Length: 331
Image 1 (spheres, rainbow, N blue to C red):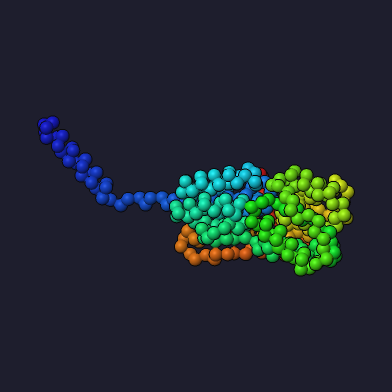
Image 2 (cartoon, helix red, strand yellow; image 1 turned 135 degrees about the vertical axis):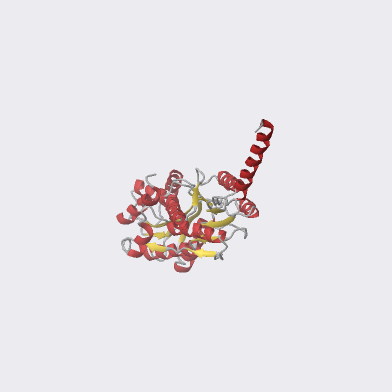
């Protein structure tokens, strides 16, 4: 056979094999994994680590990828906005957000919605309706519960300091409003010495603010702090001043340091949330929304009062004895 005849035969055979290859059964394309961004207000406090642990549990249970990223400081609104914008640009399937500011994060979340990204708000409220669900504690009710406990231990005519957390934080603002309404209801004879001072986002700033208040109002008999960092700062200030256990003290949230204060009798009550459940239900709601299921617009994760007497009860231990290392490893 001459070269002129071999070449056309070879090319024809090659095209035939190529055609057969194209027409045969193809391998199914690998399905892209569902990616859910979980964005807390911060990452250092036990509260946020518990939310992270709950989110990790949900990621394993529903076989999705959870990407955990929060701002370095709990008062850096701009950085949290940038984190939301970055995940929106990356085109994740859902964003689970604990908004640092109830107003500043509205537009970034609306833009995520416009891109078809499911959005779940956790922990702290966001204005408007540009999200799929809100998973959080009833913070107003929690604040009122704190007022009731403070009156139980301090009497109906306490001289009260309320150290606020941060301006723009919807969750703690609701707790503060609930506390003030509760004091008015349960102790109309109470004297509110200070209700307009803010602790700031760190324990160090909360310590300084607490010391200033304790020095300024020497006749104080009761104090309330609406979150973990403010409560830890106040506890330190009371210990340094020698007033721990002498001034009645109710706080919000739970950590090892606050637990030690409760056991020592320096703290009379802590409103305990379920951050683990909040993280879990936030991711679960996102997954269900992605998969076309109807989800509730508002999910209340509950709040209870921990006291020195009931701390070891199953009801409290189920909320506070979370094995963080099991889910997060050694951080």
